[in-house]
Length: 453
Image (cartoon, rainbow, N blue to C red; front, side, top):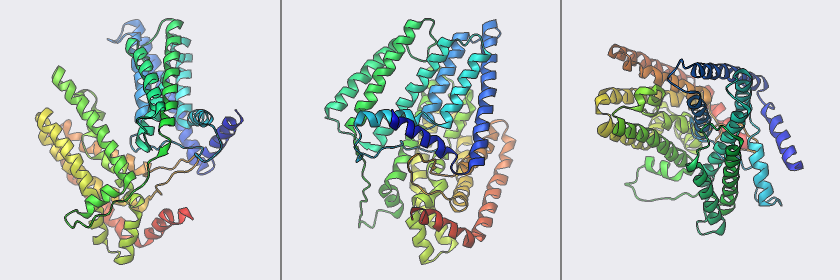
C-alpha cells in the first residue's frame, strides 16, 4: 500500500512539474467540458424520459457507456499510439502481483480519468434518471475499458510465451469474462443490484486474466536491425522495416483504419447504407491522417540519425525533402492500397471524391508534417510518469482541421475550390519554415540528442 500511495503522489506531482500553467488550463478546460457534456446527456435523458425522442432512457444510458468504452480504448491508439507505462522495472525486488497492482492503480490516476469521473458525478447530480446503480455500472465500464487497453498494449509491446501456463490461465479467465458478457453485456443498463455483482465478478475475472497475461509476457520485445546488401531493396523499405517502433505504430494504425473501413463495409453490405453518411467524423479515417499523426508529424523524432546524416553531409533543402519522401512513400502506399480497395469494392459512388480528397490530403499533410518535424520536434522516448508525446498535439489537430476542410465538397461540389487555397497555404508555410531552418536546426539537435544527456 505504501508503494501505491508513493507512486500516486509522485504521479500527481509530475503532472504539474513542467508547463504548470498550460496543464492547469488544459485541466480546467477538461472540467468545463465535463460540465457541458454532463448537462447535454442529462438533457437527452430528460427528453428520452418524456418520450420526446425516438431513443429510450435505456438506449441513452447504453450509448453513454459505449461512448466511454470506445473513447478509453481509442485514446490509446489515436491520434497516436500511447505505450503502456512500465513504472517498476523488472530488476526491482518487487513481486509480480505487487507490481501489477501498483501499475494498474497508478495508471488510473490521470487527468483524463479525473475529468471522466467528474462527468459521471455531475451527470448523477443533474439527472434524476441517472441513479447510483448506473453510476457504479459506468465506473465498471471505465475499469473494463482500461484493462482492455492494457491487454492490447501487452500484446503490442511484449513477446508472448504462448505455451506458458500463465497464458493458458489468462485464456481461461478471459473466457469466463467473455461468457458473462455475452449473456449480459456490461454496457447495457441494469435495473437491480444482482446484475452489478455479476458485472463485478466478470471484471474480476478480466483483471485476473490481465495479470496472468503480463506474467506470460514478461520479456519485452527487443529492438533488432536487419541489414541487407540487396540493392533492389529500397531505402524506403529499410527505413520502414528496421525502425521497429515506427513500423509497429504504423501497422496498428493501419489495423485501426481497416477496422473502421471494415465496419462501414459491413454496414453497407447488410443495410445498404454507409456508416460514413451517418457519422461524418469517420471520414477522417478514409484519408492518410493516421500515417501522419502516428509517425510523420514527427519524422525526425523517429529517424533522428537520418536527419543528422543529411544535416552533416549536405544540409540542403532538396535533400531533406527527398529523404522525407523516401521514408514516407511506403507507408503511404500501404495506406493508399487499403483505401482504394475499400473504394473499389464498397464505395464506388463516392470514388471521385475519395480520390480527390486523398490526393489533396497528401499534398497538404506532407508539407505540414515537415513543418511539424522542424518547428515542434518531440523526442521519441518515455520515462517514469512521463507525459511524453510521439508527435506535436498542436500539429496533429492542425492536420485534422485541414483534412476537415478537404471534406467540405461533401456539402457541395463547388467547395472543391477550397483545395487550391489549402494546398497553396500549406506549401507557402513550408517555404517560410525552410527559410528559417538554419535557426530551427539547433532546436532539433537539442531535442533529439541533448535530451539524453
